[in-house]
Image 1 (tube, rainbow, N blue to C red):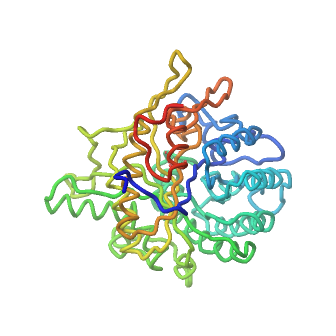
Image 2: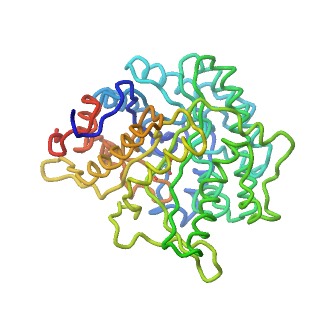
Length: 451
Ligand code: GCO
């Protein structure tokens, strides 16, 4: 029996991307503006003034990307659909050329033997809807239902796994409270309303997707980083629990229990979510699977007022984004979702690492640190499976280097290096390592994969 971490024979191996981060062609074939187009055009918001205008040009180069997926031996590919490509005004007029693109993408994936995992919303809200208030407005949840219907009617016969939302925490909190993501607003009260309407739109869309895509599985992708107290002191432990409330339980509890956590509601006071009768039952619509995005953990201490303050991971090994490499964190969250929240089908829908990848004189990119990171995290996922957690697949973030939101193109997460001036894709050592892992169904010996 090999000592190397094993995975079930039917385990799905995948890679993940998102529309705005890879497609480019933001003004092509009738696509409308998104809040990220606007955010990138606002000076000072994105590093180096980068934008997704070209990105990896996957709108045109997706056939070569699919060929690389086949070379990896992927079972599945997680991508997102750009709402403004399908409904340029957010609702109403359908842009058939936008739908045609995803039609072609899905057909080419299926022809390559790769299952499409389609995410409806990966942060690129049509600007027209933001102009009417964005996610803090309930009408945006209603527009999302219209969007889900249009997409599922066209693709529902071929897409077997739908994700309603990617990371409601980021869509709402980073975009409307911290202003770090589009639309760049810093209004905590509206961020709570945004979170509620994102979750509401999830619940509403579940029924639509089930109706229009009969045999498909429907889920949601939640990003969760476990929160640890900096010490065993009561103040730090209380601060960690409070931080966990906003980061994790504010989303876990409504989706899996049909209620918001009482302690968070108390903290919110008058900024409580704008709940209407029936909303929480809608949000808690049973899902077929849950996607977990995890990269690291958060450590907090109590500040002078007893409130949570993030403690940097000083001595610990970190990736290029400054995130601590802490594989036990993904194990903790997988176990929590299953044992505490009763989740019966899980996929790791994002896990990966940015490192300062450089091409050597021989043209190769020897990203051993990324291989080590992936091996450690996959070991933790394998341990969770051995401990009874129903993890059915793993999607590495990401297939290729891409637009890393406010960090622009400064952070590389891909198994494929993208030479941005030419958009040439170059396999890194981790590409071959992941290929061998998929082929063997277990972690390769570290030194084995190089080409
Ligand atoms: C996220 C997003 C991805 C990111 C990736 C690296 O989880 O933040 O889903 O779009 O690019 O996680 O930060």
